[in-house]
Image (tube, rainbow, N blue to C red; front, side, top):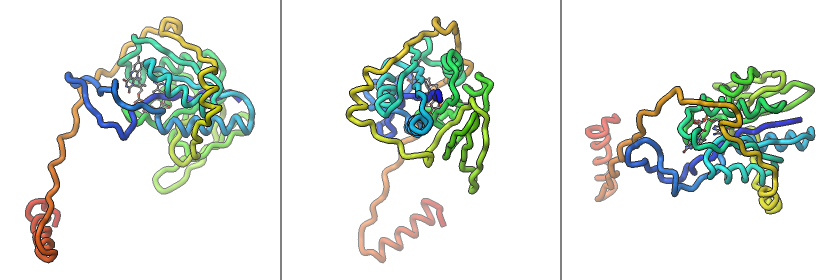
Length: 255
Ligand SMILES: Cc1cc2nc3c(=O)[nH]c(=O)nc-3n(C[C@H](O)[C@H](O)[C@H](O)COP(=O)(O)OP(=O)(O)OC[C@H]3O[C@@H](n4cnc5c(N)ncnc54)[C@H](O)[C@@H]3O)c2cc1C
């Protein structure tokens, strides 16, 4: 079985977010970066399928050179090879543009399955997986929490509002993965050492014959207003309770 996993490098969610002075983008230079957490579920699912059915797992990434670290993490977990686009002309593309690139890279080979995260935790667009499926003209199921592959078909489960939905899907198909699908493994020490030696194909937009422009233009970013400092009440407990009720009623208007 031939499986592709789409991975993105994102800022660690624990990192303090600061904007560029002109508000055009998040400052990422000094921020700790990680493999997108939802992509870890996709990587783990792909490795488990390879362990059950044989075959190979290719990591696919579009991003800056720093994204090589996220690719290396996925390879260290057990994926076999990487296909990456590195091209400054692709910087600033919207999810539709990134999906067009990914679909073109995937279309050059015949994959049985394409797995991705349900969303990238930085931009939260939830768009890339479905847009790739549309471009490849294959079925897509989002927010997958179980996945079993048989002869040319996959049976996938997804959690909807209070119900579990089970779907049969002919392959090839795209599935976006989320928490609950599995427990992603940690890269082992031998895995980390082998990762640097695994094959990595690097392509540019010119190699793919693509010339893309974003269809959605970001007008700006702004941080939410800072939260006001909390109030600490002093005095005897009965007096504090009275004051708390007064504040809730008169200031917070909660009761
Ligand atoms: C030179 C260059 C610089 C870039 N710099 C930045 C940057 O500073 N900040 C930033 O957020 N993005 C950057 N990108 C990536 C690109 O802008 C985003 O990937 C794109 O906007 C996708 O939107 P999203 O993150 O909301 O995806 P979503 O639709 O939320 O992602 C869903 C899933 O799609 C897959 N996916 C998403 N993006 C990629 C990708 N790039 N490669 C492979 N799989 C992917 C993942 O599996 C992810 O879980 C850069 C790209 C290039 C080429």
